[in-house]
Image (cartoon, rainbow, N blue to C red; front, side):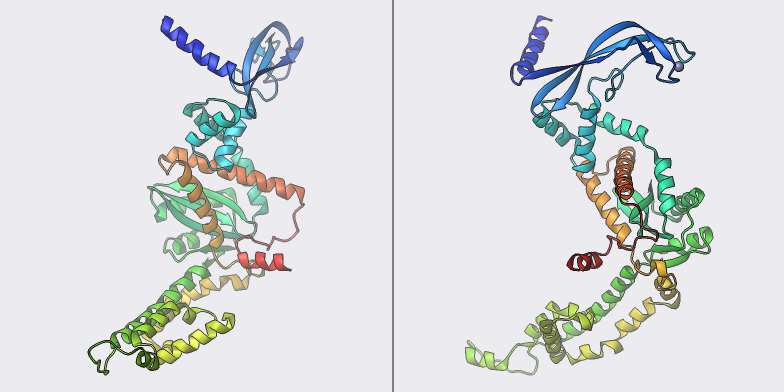
Length: 437
Ligand SMILES: [Zn+2]
């Protein structure tokens, strides 16, 4: 017992002797105070004191709170206590501490351990794991997701991006509005199948979301569900995904031709034993193998748009065609037939669905939603490594809440344009063009 007491004394001493300890008195005990539920005034029957820890950089600061106990004159309760703003009843830390913890987790992407270390360094405050997770839990309870949902619905542009992403054992289904640049909803599900996708999208419909265009990747999860839920909506495949598929086919062809060239090697040429004189090698130019390597290095030129080529790239392409004239007839090779096949009629109409709707002309890819996905995945990896479903959902909800509040603040400050904003951050090219202009 005595040993314990000594240990306790010594830790206290360490805390109090080192840094300067400040105490700020806070008085919050008027004669009459309102009932926390109904607001009817009650009379004070006693005053109490307690110490609440707050934060200041490299300082130990306590609030010495004087609060009152009141006799209620309503039916809600018999007594209640007053509490100053920014301090929860019975809390050991004020809300500044909680806010600092949440900022570190949600904005700075720190893990619980790093938050604790950072709070100790900056504010000389020792927090427990439990307190950090409690901050997250409380924040989730405080959230007004229905409010966000109404706000997002009010601004919905009519174009919806849907994507799925694997997070550890779970799959994140994410829907965003690319024109408004807002996440719309997410669901964390156990498996990526049609049932889950249907339930997710059905929820969106229940909220009253009626998209005109739905953009997805080429996955076969979507067509039947979309036809069932929103028969009038146009289904658009992400142009980016379709182009990626096409490029793959064409590059397969280049690879095939190049391998042929490489295999031809030194065919038909006699090699004399011994060291080759340098002059002769130079005169003969590159071997087929070297040419093949050149073609391999520049293979992307084949799928690049001709009008985007620089002079050097144009010259390289000409050299490639000199080495491998077959590349010129790439349009006649079997791989390209396959590529055209990939653009089957049905798929193609989906790919150009955006052309029919002027408002959506600019958004042809679901890059936007994938970018949000990547951010979430990165953020989450840093924190929980996708351990538990519950913590993952909690984190995602908080992150989205924060994002929505930021957007709401920004859009309140600058009243929104009447038409859907086309300035979308999903396209870096337009951004660069704006900056230049
Ligand atoms: Zn009351």
